[in-house]
Amino acid sequence: MALKYNDINEFSQIIGELRASFTKRRLTTPLEYRRKQLEQLYHLIEENKEELCEALYNDLHKSKIESLIAEIGTLREECLEAHNNLYEWAAPESVKTNMIYKMNKCHIRKDPVGTVLIIGAWNYPVTLLLTPLVGAIAAGCTAILKPSELAANTAAVIAKLFPKYLDQNAYRIINGGATETMALLKYRFDHIFYTGSGVVGKIIMSEAAKHLTPVTLELGGKNPVILADDADIPISAKRLVWGKSFNSGQTCIAPDYIICTRDTQVALVKELPKAIKDSYGSDPQKSPDYGRIINQRHFDRLSNLLSQTNGKVVIGGNSDRDDLYFEPTIVSDVPKDDSLMQEEIFGPVLPIVVVENIDESIKYINERDTPLALYPFSRNDKTVKYILDNTRSGGVVINDTMLHYSVSSLPFGGTGASGIGAYHGRHTFDIFTHKRSVMSSPLALEKLLTIRYAPYSESNFKSMSYFMYSKPNFNSQGNILNFKTVIGILFMIVAYITINGILSNLIDFSKS
Image (cartoon, rainbow, N blue to C red; front, side, top):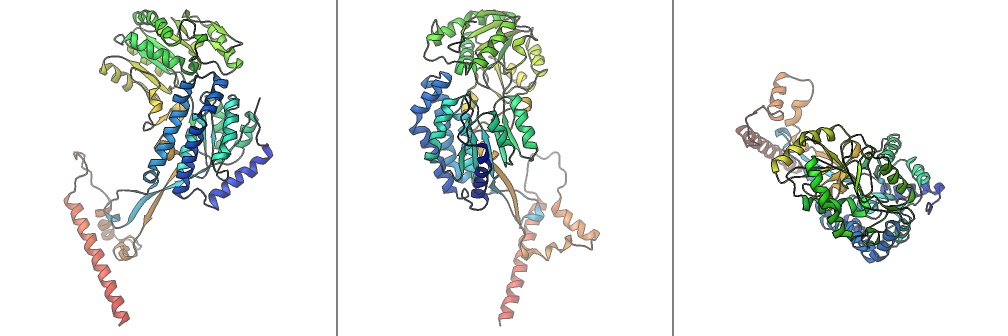
């Protein structure tokens, strides 16, 4: 059931109020205001983590530890990093110029883009909604947040807590379903940040195009695991089970399928049952650490995919629709065109595709949409480098899965069908920031700059070109201070001092 906290007829008024706070009142401009709001967001998460964890359990059967790691902990770190580094991130950035502009003041100013829309996802309904907000607050934007209606309990808790901590003149929550989302998309925003499926991502992008609104799309895809023959199979098995079973496989960067040789498949299938039992016991349904599928529609989708496969279910396969439980399931010898290989699985089903060698693995991956993540497993650095040199993906973790998400200094995002744009840490700040070019032209240099004015002459052009354009030196190892640069700097300094001296004398003479 959709949670409707705002009538659609109110949307225009809400957006208008947020835009007025940004454009007229300049409410979010001061850095101290932004830092205070980041503190408040941190306190919202920290002081209510028990209630949030309970809501996450009710929505997805997430264990408390899993929620604290993947939802609460990562978000707290994002808040602290933005708060502690805001002055550095927001500071004007100096730039290099060619010789003729050395006396000009050139820099990049960091301006907020405006009023933004953030649309969250149900699989991580806290962090995927509020992490983009961290960047929007830090950048100085006003924002509307639209939680996923599928994680209804978490959406209700966030909607209740939000106005108690954050300034409603700048940041608002609007709950609802597809109807409310489409209604919001009819309005003009200065940026739209969406996390979810590629199908909905196309709709978001299409609606945004009507207003020429830029978008960040955090989507998904079929993330391949390339398991080389020299991989450490016991360790690989543990890490693959962790990545595929975390949140019951409902993670955009979960390993989607394994591609390996037949001998490696045999060795892996022997190790996987032990890794599953070590994590969740002999009956994962009774484990307090194993989650559930979000709803019956997604459960049925997974069941249909598994029922249509031409592969062999070698581990797991059991499920309980009433409990939304889906056992960790391994399917071996999956054909390359199998039902399990047509779309992102987004559940605890892991197919294995058999190939002859690494080159065949690479060819198979490159024939499909660019994945959000790629996971090569090998002891050989040359093998890993060969894989990376010949594939594309949003991100890569070598000999493990998913860990790159938790490193805020790494940009997180996809490419092609797996998304547009990347965020986390400073990268989120950059998404919601317009880098505004600023150049100041000193009046005192007017005499020197007269060579740019018409009527043009060949001699003036040559003089100007000498300082404006570089000569090619393709054997150069870098920017080395050369004779021309030194002469140019000295010339500009002497000219500046001379002109200022003449002006000062004229001023003194006029006063006398």
